[in-house]
Length: 430
Image (cartoon, rainbow, N blue to C red; front, side, top):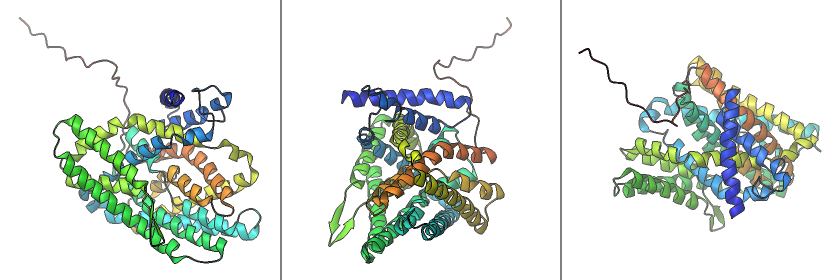
């Protein structure tokens, strides 16, 4: 335990110190945290073997999953705050259309490219792996996007649309992955399961939204019994932790495997709470401030989790580069076509697709599930390689796009190390 605490402390300090270096070259803090994690991972500092100085193995990093899952829950809860009815009335229909279309177009394009690669070179990639990678390509990392938006205080039409699309993208990605995983399993086993392809994915989404709505309503009900800010903050944190724990439960009813999506559950909790609680906005701001160290740890641990051995595998690099090019084209042109269809402004049409490039935890979770299929190791390694590229480059591209449309405010140079001094009193003539 003492080694784990030392590692977490060094991870926090290392991430913050690295952010000072990346600021000199105008890179987002998210990139700094990921690089700090890479340096602390088992292939750099961890390889030295000094306890506490770094993570000595990927298994040790995996042992910190309670931190990353909790952080992801708070991030999803915060994103739910974007689904206020007042905002949905203005951009809801467009966000839903764009969120669905760009995800489907990305999946179809990656599927076509990788399936053609399979028929041209069957030894390189199997058909189930090609289908699975197409579905994984639809997923976008909400955490990296949110951190860039928060760091630079971005606000405007593109930012508001982006946050809604990212949230919708995860629900669509879950459906696409579940259906594709069922098809890939059928191709491997030689039989199609309607329950696995259709019933279980839809049931997971319905159960997730139902549990999230219930937790959001309960949070609002319990929160009314407390009036001090500290106690209301405490009950909010407790409910998010409870929601994260409940979303990890899995059970079986009549041969149907039931479970929840952590992201959907926590997003729905935040959505319901922010729409029925009159003081939710102030409380959400306090929760954001409380979770900042947790978010830093999330990205540092995500960086430490990246397996650098994949860059030494020629087949992984080949398929990975093709996957990255096809996915990037799908996200960019899929978003562009969707924006044209919904009559968005030219700045949004030209830049939204670039902001959807980051990919991380959700895709890795899908890849781990897909690793159980024949050829699953290649799927996992390709996703690991793409995450390594997207997480290091994606936040900077998101910042660039938001800067291009003028939605990023200057960070300023105000220091909070000194107290604000009162204004000097004017000297009146006697």
